[in-house]
Amino acid sequence: MKIGLKDRRLEIYEDFIRGARIEDITEKYGISRISVWKFSKKLEDLGYIVERGRKGYRIAGKPDPSPFDMALSVRNIPGIDEFYYFHEIDSTNRFAKENERCAVFAEEQTKGKGRVGRRWESGRGGIYFSISLNLNIPIADIPKITLTGGLAACKTLENYSARIKWPNDVLINGKKVCGILSEFVGEELSAKIVMGIGINVRNKIPENLREKATSLAEIDPDVTITDLFDKLCRYLGSYLRMFPNRWDEILEEWKKLSDTIGKQVEVAVGNQKYVGIAVDIDRDGGLMIDRDGEIVKVISGECFYTNY
Ligand code: BT5
Image (cartoon, rainbow, N blue to C red):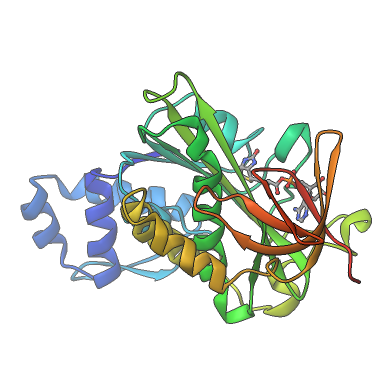
């Protein structure tokens, strides 16, 4: 389902939430009573409960996730025109790479992607979300986009004491609950950036990942995808408005939520391994590692903690 962010249905949906009078709706938009009724039927097909009183229509119950609330949330992200909602897709990043200025959500992914060809387990009940942005930034800035997405996700999960592990993981109680995958499409400076965010909400974590992965429902059984998604979009919106001019402030906030700084790490970059203490993140988003007094910088890689 595609919902344009300027789509009138979004306004009518908000009127339904408020329990507006039918006459007011038909007058406001110059549409017939039957169109209003048809839209209310469509909402019912999607799992909403619509009360039809003598005076008007009112939303009395919502599915979770609620596509129309999510489209309203996406309006907080600058540079997005359309919201696509899928029950199932191969990968929201794949879709976002092929479409412009869009946000894509799926209830489940059949080929969810991690970094360097890895798989992202994407059972029904999680958040699988990608945005396609026309940011004219050099390819060297991609790590910054990943850190920005990680910060937005970590802030979203702040009530659960989430922390960020460099470069792209959000952890709760030391276990991964969220991963970010940023991709660069096209030519430098006229490129499109796709940022994908996966959050385990009430999707099942496969047995082989239980040691190192967790889901929010394990901690908070009442958590809803719609509320989390709203927070995520608001944080993404505010940090993306700060990007790239106020990057230093984003980085400072990231550091406050860092799980990695101060830890003993081993970072694998291709065949190379860097072992030492993570001491800082530099302005490019690289990890600074102290190897017995010698500081080395790593721009991307797989980071393992080695002191426990
Ligand atoms: C990531 O890769 O963490 C990036 C994940 C990005 C997923 C989103 S979902 C929306 C969008 N569309 C996509 O197709 N992808 C993005 P990486 O750092 O490579 O971590 C992958 C590793 O994390 C795997 O090798 C597993 O060990 C582990 N893993 C896989 N699925 C997981 C899950 N659901 N929760 C926690 N850990 C998982």
